[in-house]
Length: 263
Picture 1 (cartoon, rainbow, N blue to C red):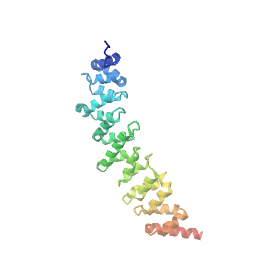
Picture 2: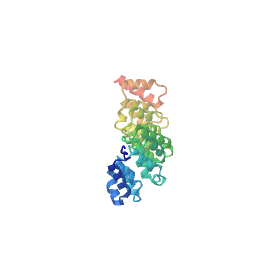
Picture 3: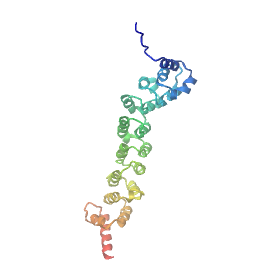
Picture 4: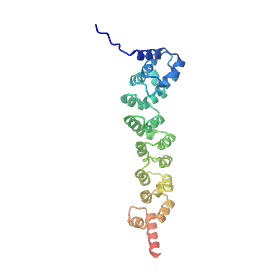
């Protein structure tokens, strides 16, 4: 008669049994690097408390089955750290991570959006949620978000009408020239932000940004006149002939052209 094949290898079964029976101290010592069977067993261990759970969720070998089980347990998902760790864990099933994402705080979503170790679809979900929440966020949170290197958030925040947010955005490494031009030409961009972009060491030196500032009627007059004085001749000719350019800019461009002809 054929021998019955055991459902689990003896080593795996022993490891799972040990996870179920270890003391709290032993769990703390082993969970962060334990193999999957031990992690699964630990979920049934009465000594598993919040500190031990946080170690379990740091274990990059924690299996999807264990993470899904934690995600279904409302006692665990009441804890902010547990939800955040589940969304960011590479083995959490995508559907589970995306379903938990709307329950994260804005700061945690920002961390998810910029963490390249998180699945792209989960990062995109975090970005989508943040873009919806942007208008309702306290100013401090928006400014903090503007410093985070997420392309989707940069593009969304570039449309913001708050000077503090836009100033923070100017130093973001993911800000593109097209974003800077959009800010410089924005009808709702506050004058303080327009001044800041004109004085920015990188963006204030870009011709496309300077031209956008010169064509924006909200650009402070002293800033516009300084830009006119530094403009190239072909740009001055364009500005002098552009009926949509602010009058002070057209007049300034005409005078600079006359001065250059007289010289």
